[in-house]
Length: 210
Image 1 (cartoon, rainbow, N blue to C red):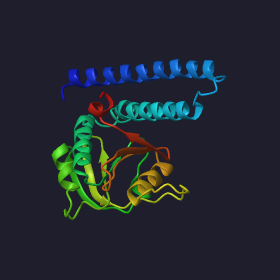
Image 2 (cartoon, rainbow, N blue to C red):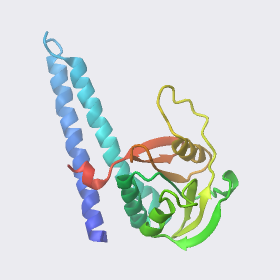
Image 3 (spheres, helix red, strand yellow):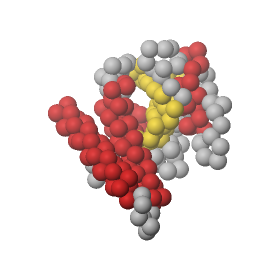
Image 4 (tube, rainbow, N blue to C red):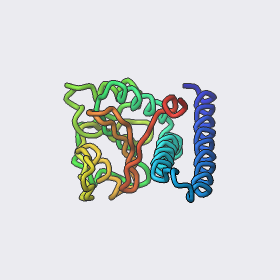
């Protein structure tokens, strides 16, 4: 994806978000005007608006992902390609992008790599059966510093929500540092990122614009 194509994509995402916000405003006004009507289904409309908000959050997350990491690595496009390809194949992955805070004091170190970032390298590391696919890779600047790192698990209580080990690890590290952790679910292929102890869903630009 060229810089021009990338900028066009992110502009389209912003328009997509703006359109959904306008739709929510219109539907909220309709809800307010229809409250007195006997057959009006308020719960149905609230559920629909909730779905619209969830879609906006997912679309915005891809846009803001770029903003969060482009200062710390020039290879964010390679990382974006990798997570989309991994998600399509349902290959689980855990990618730590180190930012201002060092993460070395919070992880159990893995196998040193010191390799230039590329989407193919990231995908090969997380290919099922690869000895390095368990654990996380650490990205610092334009390099993959190491692979098969063990991250600290969060102690958050998620109630009845099912949160896997990869997601707990990603959240756990971001509770201790300002790192951004990208997570691909092996079960569902869904993409997300953790930042500041919070998990955000990601959908690709192609999906968000459908």
